[in-house]
Length: 343
Image (cartoon, rainbow, N blue to C red; front, side, top):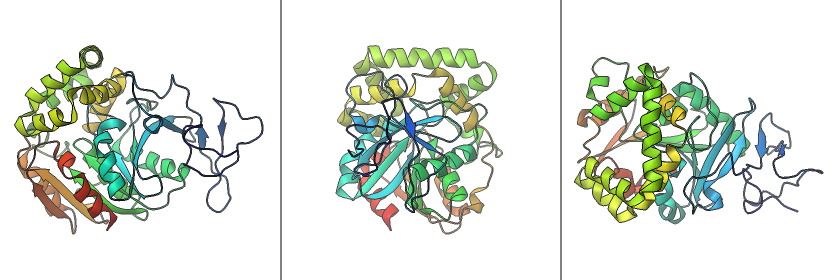
């Protein structure tokens, strides 16, 4: 019998790896690497209680799971072509592994295997107290080992931009290219925090100083997204501005609400994500040595318009790509972004 995504979560499609004797659902096993040696990490069948969406309708490729060597489970989605060029997605804030679901067709058309993990405490991934941006980069190194992927590219949208940069910095020998999309500068630098949208400043400070109140806000948002998906999506569109409203409307308000409900189902993890957002990166943009493309929407109303140019100027050899669109600019240019990451 072969392990396949239809039968076992957290496995490589058609890997051909035999199931060890006595393995039953819920067990974990060590997955051999390309040279036949066994790694420290575990690949697990993920119980529905651990890695699932709170809104019905997901396919199995959106609920995969691996277990790291320290015991934490990482939940992830996979889109595109299973044997395509691997691209890791770092999701945005108030988002989760599902925030690139709309990229599935573009990933298939461009030969991309799009791998989108939840950060610790978000969606189906176990939390990690006091985590930093660089902690996540180290997780990705082990995570990709478990998937038996040596080289890959990485993309990060919005809050995920700093995580994509961290992976490029920490795993430079393995990363082909990095795409930072609608990303921010380090919030610890003078004047940057003040350049955030008011709501993000509120969520960040609340998560730092009054975490119970932040968690109440996030829990309420999640309940609303589940109970009133169309209304929730329409409200988000009204708050984001015309360019982004068009994207959400075209993709369907319920789809956005479904992603949001999953992202917000662990309110403590969301507050943790905002606290990590405000911590030092652990490196400077100038320290990156891999090829980086910075993408920005010309009608983005959430991110300071100067930040994209500043990032591109400070990252050695980086290129800057402005495109018509808002904060969700990637949704309009997934094919171009993927082709760039494959170079």
